[in-house]
Image (cartoon, rainbow, N blue to C red):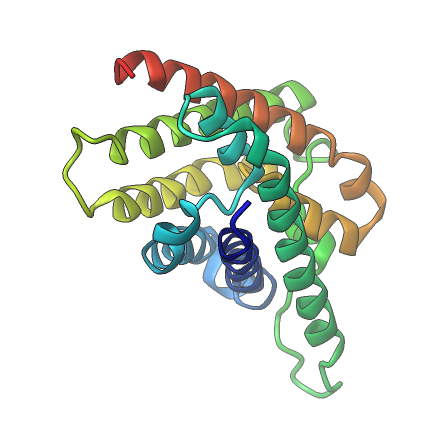
Length: 228
């Protein structure tokens, strides 16, 4: 396994969690879901251009496994990629938590979210059911893999894949944040759940199982659609 590829996956996932989850933490209460959705889309777009030629720019365990299902990535390399991605997300979330604790008490106190508030979840008053959460994560991650595999196909216009992928990710966050806080990415979910503990940690299995299942569906379907 290429160590530079693993470093790229670590850095890319670190950047995703640090900037996008950081936006949800610090700017989410004032910027709303549009700002958070754009943050997720823009950081993936940027890091795909910056690091995609080194590692493929997965930054997401579900994407890695979906690409395995789609015949675009070697299964023997998948575990190493997933470990690098999870570690990158965890380091970013830990730094965000330290920064969050560094707020100097004063008046007025800025509006901030907590790690619990930006974690993925379901249920509770005014929230969606487990079935709705699972269905949402399966569908949006399957669609995400279709975008990834289609835009990176040899028959697609060269050089534009990161733009399509980043814009699609922003759109998928817009539709899913109200339902699950938008996972699509088990590394992102793990990073915030471990910092928050409690219910987000208890719910974490959902945000591994559903995105991976959706990604495998999307990868396999894309393999057929692209006739690869």
